[in-house]
Length: 115
Ligand SMILES: [Zn+2]
Image (tube, rainbow, N blue to C red; front, side, top):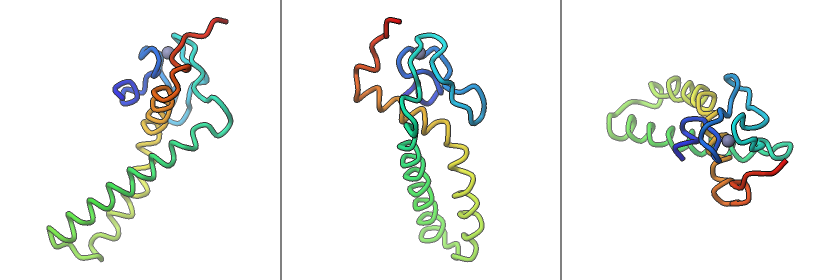
């Protein structure tokens, strides 16, 4: 989890996962772990991103509307903006988290490949 939050390789913790704001490296520069294992591999990260966005929006709505008394009209623009900006900001971290979870569940990914 710590390596995912720092956007580092889940196997070695050294190599960077991204070469740009939206560009995922093909492999780890240190241990050569292949990040995108198959076409569409990171599709699962979209579910994580969606879940986090929905949860944060729901909690924000409940706190601002029910507890602080903001009207729905007052909340429409800020929460809509949040729903558009947050997924873009969380894009890299949810991809890193997806790969870290895959490495956690599939221990064969944690073994160094001989090439
Ligand atoms: Zn690595």
